[in-house]
Image 1 (cartoon, rainbow, N blue to C red):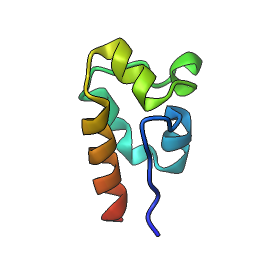
Image 2 (image 1 turned 45 degrees about the vertical axis):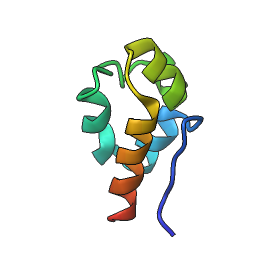
Image 3 (image 1 turned 180 degrees about the horizontal axis):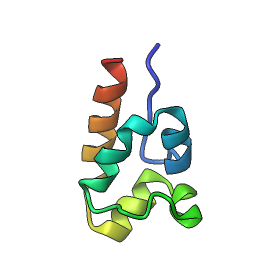
Image 4 (image 1 turned 45 degrees about the horizontal axis):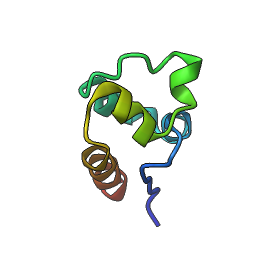
Length: 68
């Protein structure tokens, strides 16, 4: 079964699972991936701060993981 995320998944956990998804965060303006605070945020929290659509990011991540 593919790794799956939701809006409450912690960003650090996602990056620890597969750092290849880092560009998905970077292209949405989340350039602080190395910051300890950002690694502890959920997708929903980070998207709210950055003014991006959490559902869009969740779908993009889950599509990526499903294809692995």
